[in-house]
Image (cartoon, rainbow, N blue to C red; front, side, top):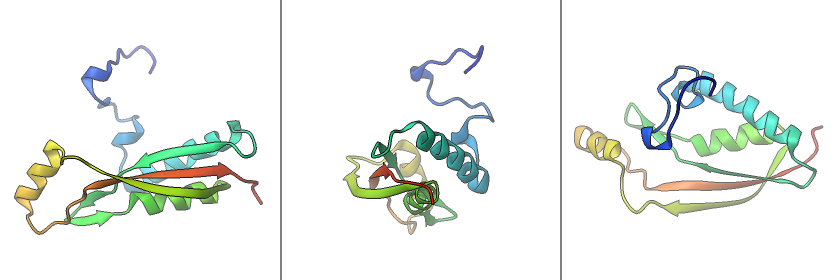
Length: 121
C-alpha cells in the first residue's frame, strides 16, 4: 500500500486505486488481471477459492458470481465446486437500501467458488 498507513479497523481504503472502489467494466478488467496473476503463480491442479457477493444497482441484482466464474474460466481456471452461505444478517447499508427501496431484491447469501488451475488453450 506504499506509504499509506492502513489498518483493518479503518475498513477498506477510499483510495481511487483500490480495486473495490472501481465500477462496472473497470472493476471486471482489474479483477481479470488479478485472476491472471493467480493463475501464473499456482501449480497445475492448484486451487483458487473466492468468496463473492452479488450486489444491487438500480434496484436490480448484479450477478458478481457469474461474472467471476466467466473471468476465471477465461483465464484458464475450471470451476470444480460452488457453495453458498446464508448471511446471518443484512449489513447496515443493505438495511438502509431496503427501507428506501422496499421492492428491491433481498440478497442474503454469498457464494464460495472453488476453481482449479487447468491449462490455457
